[in-house]
Length: 54
Image (cartoon, rainbow, N blue to C red):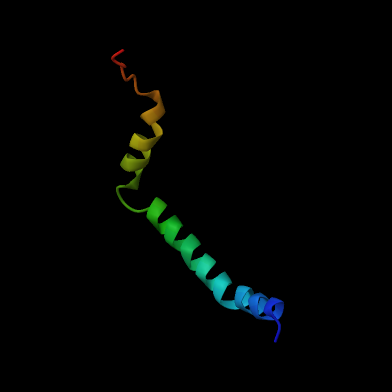
């Protein structure tokens, strides 16, 4: 079995499963209870008026 065939079989099976599980985990993390407050705080960081002491 050459390298390409082995990597192709791995990508078609286990890597696809791993990427799917990772995606589901990210979606669950994003929509968890209490996530909105953290997301709103992170989204407002660039808009905060921080005074720089020169």
